[in-house]
Figure: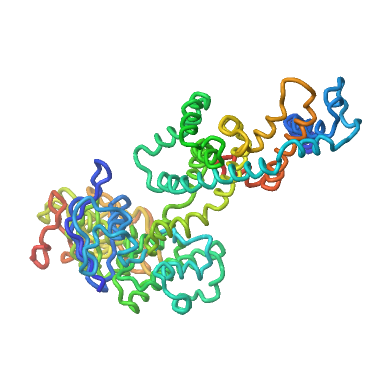
Length: 276
Length: 342
């Protein structure tokens, strides 16, 4: 009896989880399906789910009209570049906060997090002007800088929670063994923190890849990543749903594949060091 | 080589003073044990010597050179931690080789020294394992191996045996003592276990609330404790303290007598009482006696002393082994020798 009840419960939970999963995934699935329809079918009402005339013409047209590869490379450079630059700054910062905390360390951490509470649009104009005057508008370097700064609080926080799980005595042992600060971090701390660093890296690549507000506002053509590539297919008139869907699918596919292969690391990253 | 001199060093964390001004000289080749109850500052003192904490004032000289401001890496000391603090991502070989690699020795020399250390510590078969695959005793050996390959000026041990089980602890105690005998290098060893202190030390430093209560050889501390704290801390079971009327008869505020210096008798003696518990250890019997008007005293009898709960017994202290303390707890001159205890 008890076993039957547990099984029913399990079945219920599984169904619930799958339903939620499908609801969340549905927009992406629908986008992907729409990308294979003709423009007429894309706006047909009622929409057809699978019984439509499958076509690749949207993809060929998108490919002809814009340079997917350029935007793809921009996305790769901007998301990887900003994540690596962020790690470079965040590793020493998180090291000092985790292993030599001062009286104000907590406050500094909270302050860094509070910058994420600021509405980005509030600082858009000053940053835009700054970028215009320094010639950083529509450059990859400019986007790397701004995305590094945007995601830095999250990188520091994640690394901080991982570093805190590492016993300080091991680092002290390294110091006693003659390691300077650089050797201590390179040969002892980082290898021990590899799982944490990997999930930090993955999460931030995804965040940077998907970031649209700053990339849309600070780039035009040369440095525009895939977010801008998608946006260029949305227009106030004409039929564009199918082509927009094709562009979106091409833009999210790489990161979707990356996410799929690194699920385990991501789950660990997203639980934020809460579970050991 | 290996002399460590602490001069007027202090340490405070914020407003809290952990170590008041303290002077201590550790001679080359000595095995010195810092002992005291938890929170007495013994680990802090060790960490100050190691350079893992900065002194608030005072100077530390190692090997004749001022090391007060040197980082730990440049003090030439090696440390064995309570948690072993091995590098979990490295094999035993790389753990032991780490300090040598930091010193930029060439690979051949590193390999030779690692092999030699592993042979001394019976780790040769485990060199390619990770610390996670070793037992507690083996991990401790790796930690010691990592310390000895550097040929340091002095070894620092921070309660290295407290995570081991009782049998292993006795073994490792012997191994460390043998290591000291064969290397002849200065060793500073922190423990709260007075048995470790008594068995291993050339010189014991008894600490209490950051202050040095007494420095001396194990036997000195045992037979001529300078105050009540040292008297109570050294020796197991601890010294019996008697206050009030009985003590005033000996001209002191408190008298102390160790369990092994109380003569037990079933016919007569100075104090009488009833047995509450008797612990038979085989070699010894410890008898807890509820003495009328004094309280519980512990006495050591031979292996077979046939008493049981409720029996009436008499206790007589050996006069020459009686310790007398004044109201502040300082030792008064011993009755037998008539000398003032310094």
